[in-house]
Image (spheres, rainbow, N blue to C red):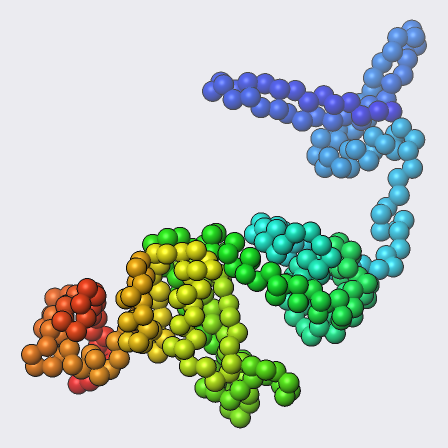
Length: 333
């Protein structure tokens, strides 16, 4: 017996080419006169392709074994989340961004992927890598890494910080473009952190020492540079070195900084004004707005009778655009 592929192609009246599938199970034999004949035993056209392929092998004498009954699964390691993280990291060019090939780079790369799929402590991460529960450490060959190796890789990554930030600046920032900056804080445990101090807690952990970090991003929020400062550093003080960093270290001369009124103060504006090619976007403080809205000031509610936004000028803000907006939700009756 054999399977005969009797499929045929034809062209419709509209000129479309179509195929009619036809698989027939046939038996070959010779009649009484010794002439070869074929007898159709069954029409297999409705069977799926894999079933027809299996039947062909069986007719040829092959032994077919069901995969589930032929194997015993002794261990199955999750890999889907790791594979997805690898693909995204490859799309972003993460390995080349970190630095040249080295064991430290492989460990740093694995640490980043681990933070994506299973954020834990350093010790827990080492134990997870060494246990037969993940393919993450096997792929870069770092399953034997210990805590000392991890901290050495983190020191190596810190030494690469400047080069990484320059690459990110070239990728996401452009001359004449806009950069976003803000300061945040995180509370810390222990007493040996040199930067830990009591300050304004942005995560509501009163009575705990903290560190602060300023993040520079592009307008879409993609991180470009980060600096960690002492936990009691005021926002304007932390912002001051960013101006110099963007111009000197990242090589951008024309840039507009966007920050809240607590970050870009009058003192910082004076410093930005003195720099050629530096601009800023911020909000005025309440007393400054009240002065503009005084009886003889340029900011009057009649500006918003027919429009939502208005642009005004004032001698106290030479060369600056003052864009005003009236918010009915916070307007007093």
